Length: 187
Image (tube, rainbow, N blue to C red; front, side, top):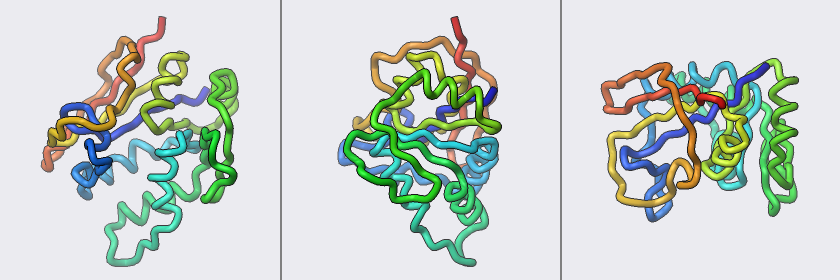
């Protein structure tokens, strides 16, 4: 059975974007991006909420050239080739290839997708990930902690989400980023 992974970049104080909606402070350097690419390599399908999907659409239209680092070109090819499911009540159509729109998040449909998928799934967006954690669907959480305190904004998980975690891995980067990988303890 495929795993459902929640991987997110957040400030030390727990935000994916600051109070102004900015996240440039979270841009990973080449070493972090290379590590992200390796961590995501097992993923065949991305599950997104509308806002996260709209953010990630950058990769659909990005025109990487020989001046871009290989890790950027690699991620662009990888993201474009992956399947994407976007949960939105407002989008009428997808703006990227290999993408379908679902009107509501259906935990049972995601369970079936996990059972039938030959590759792992990744979920993006705090609200959607929170729903999936509460439904017992998320298997692992990968948190990239940015060496920044932004003082407020959008948290990487809704406050109501609760779960026990088991630390599986850590990695420290020279840029000050830290990666923490946890397994969600079921039951």
